[in-house]
Every structure is written in C-alpha cells, then in structure tokens.
Length: 548
Image 1: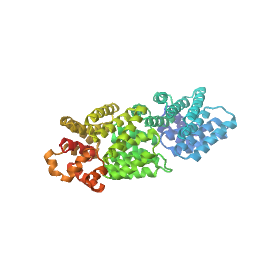
Image 2: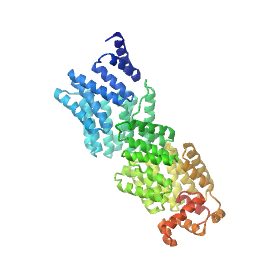
Image 3: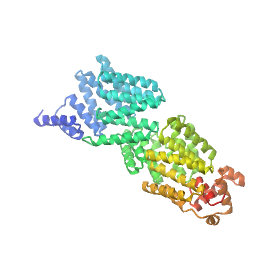
C-alpha cells in the first residue's frame, strides 16, 4: 500500500472505533479503491454502509468479506457475515435467499466443529418464525438457548436480543406481566450504550411492535423519546429503518405531532418501496392515509389506502372511516362488518371495534353498537392498557348518548377524558370532549357544552383536523327551538324525533310506512339543514330544543 492508502486506512479504523460512520466510510472506501483490504476492514466498511442506510452496498461488502474469511479458513467470521446477510434478507421478505445464507452459516460452523456465539444468533430467526406461526412456547425455548450461548461467550448483543425475544414470546403466551420487563431491560441496554449500534434499529422496532400488540402506547412513547436522546449523542445521525419509522409515525400521530408523523411515514415509504419493495411498505402507505384522512384530505387518503392494499396491508378501519366521513355510511358499514367477522384474535378485534361502534351509531344500529362496545370493554379490561380502556369508555359513552342516557354517558366519558390526558392523546381527547358536550346538552347544561365544544374546536384547529373542526363549529351554530320548526318540514321533525329515540332507519321506515331510502334522504336533509353530521348530535339537538 502507498503511504496515502495506509493513512486513509488508519484514519478509517479510528473513525470506526468512535462510531463516526460517515468519516469511517469515506476513509475506508478511499483505501479500498487503492488496494485490496483485509477481510476485517471489509467487514468494517460493510457496517459503516449499513449504519448510513446503504443496505445494498453493505450486503455486497459482507458477501465479499464472507468469501475472504472463508478462503482464509476463518469459519466463525465467515459464518457471522453469512448470518448478517441472511437475517437482513429475511427481514426484507426474501425468504429463499435469506434461508440459504443462514444454512450456509450453520454448515460452516458444523464443518469446522466450532462452538461460536454465531450459533446463538442463528437460533433467533427460527424463534421469530415460531412466534409468527403461533408457537410462542417453542420460541421461548429457542430464545432461552440463545441466551445461554450469549452468556457463555459474554456477548451483550446476543443476550439482549434473546431477552427481548423471551419477552415477546411471553406476551404472546398471555403473560405480559412477565414479558414487558424484559422489553424494558433490552431498551435499557440500548440506551446505556451496551449494544453494538448495528442491532439497535431491529431491537427498538421489536420493542415498539410489542408495545403496539398490547396497546401500551405510553411505554412506546417513553422508549421512543429515550432512543431519540440516544441518537442525539451519536457522532452521526442515526438512520431509522423503514419499519421503525412506521411505528414512530403512529406514536407521533397519537401525541398530536401530525406533521412529524407524516414526515416519518413518508420516509418509511421511500425506503420500503426501493426495489425489491418490502411488504412493510403497505404499513407506511396506511399511516399516510390515516393522516390525510384526519386532515380532511380525502383524495390523498383514498390513494394511500389503495396503495397500502396493493402492498398487502388491509386498509381498514381507515378506509371505512373515510367512507363514513364522505357520507357513504352503507359502504363503511359493509366493509367493517366483514372486517370484524374475520378478526378472530382479541387484539385484532380491539383494533377495529372502536371504528365499528362509530359506524354502527352513524347507521342508527344502537343495539349492535352496544354489543360491540361491551366486547371492546371486556377486551380492554383483560389487556389493561390505558389507550384501549379510554377507547372503550368513549365508545360506551357514545352508545349511551345514542340511547338517550345522558347521565350515564357523562360519567363514562369523564373517565375516558382522564385517560386521554394521562397518555397525551389530544385528538382522541377532543373527540371525547365533543361527546361530553352533546351529553351535556341532553341534560340542559349548555354552559358545560359550550366550554367542551370550544376546547375541542381549538384542538382540532391546531392539529389541522378540518373535518372535525367543521363538525364542532356546526354544533356551536345550532339554532333555537323556534328556528328548528321553520327549518324542518313536518315529516323531517317526525323522523328527527324517532332518530332521537334510538330507532334504526328500518324501524323508522316501518313506523312511518316509508321506504328506508326515503328515511335516509330525510335524515340527510335534517343533517344538512341543522349543520349536523351524526345521529348522536341530532339526538342532542332534538332534546335540547324540546322536539321529543
């Protein structure tokens, strides 16, 4: 090597040791262009490329390092490179190639009859597969074997990864009280700098995914903030991977940081659609769709939901809620009935029941909405997550309002509001405030109704939730009793009175001897004239103005 190349290599190694990935990559690449690097330096260059988000380059370099180590008879290092290539391919959904590289890593160690920490890492893909196949007990056994190997070799990366895997397996086995502390322990190891940065993204992503499984969004938010502080301490900007960005987007959305959430979702989408596109791209498109829908950007929302579907991510309940916002209640209800029928796992049902209750109430089916809200309350009680409990309380309150039980609704919605504030979910809190206002009007408490509507409107305006802000503004502008008689026809007043008693469109049609289509048209006219958008709001209007 020339003196210049030797100096570049020395600087590259020094930068690598202090985790200055960009400078290390530049110096090592310079040395690589001038002379053949040792396999250890090729491995360093591969890690730098990976940390900078250049995954294609890192895979090529690890393959090159693998062959160099193999040619020199270093089975352990060659197997380590093969594992890294295979594991990343599996995460990208390239199962055949990933399995091939992992099989090669095992064969190298077997042929050399070598005990190695790599054997512990090779257990982890099989354990993850066991969880996905619904066999968490087998996964726990495999992660326990990996943990024993990690302890034997004093390898912090493997022991931390294995403990995290045990935690996820325990959660799937219905033992979250035992599993969650292991997630926390893994994140402590990350933020304390005890792990190689190479594994941080995968570990964080797994922890946040597990928190989402049990609806523990408060814990997910806490660890997201902790990892952000860890990132700020790094010499270079830490590049989150696509799936991590999707989780971050969801957490930011819940905490009312919609612009930041959209930025993360779009970055995830850009990373995941690079050929060959990753299956998780559907999740990125879905998050974009959710944010567009909440902002009232319906055309963009629909396009994002369709793209999510193309990548295999079912666009529900977002698409059904979009249809509801567009006024197509029948389409929304048809979609949600199928989704709820097909959701078997309690966790999956919990993700769709809230939207189902909202759509059922819009369609006037209070009885089915009550049954769905009761089921959601049971699931929330079992899981015990504050977010899910707040959602179930809000849904129960909405059903009580629709049934005319304002007193019961007020006490229930107050509990929901306390929980929304505790977990810092401003959009959901504002929606519960709107419901509180409707219930307050039912009991004649106009002062409380005004205060709650004003507070909800300010939050919706700050977030950019234009559809919600317009709905609340319409509630504020509602007319006096005398105006109601002038605005509505006698038939519309009859229909409004029956809506306020909780009758479905079919029941109203039977009572008035009309077709359901005619009843739907009357209700649409009522909503337009009075500036309302839900049956609950119509019920509150009718009681407040003594039309019932």
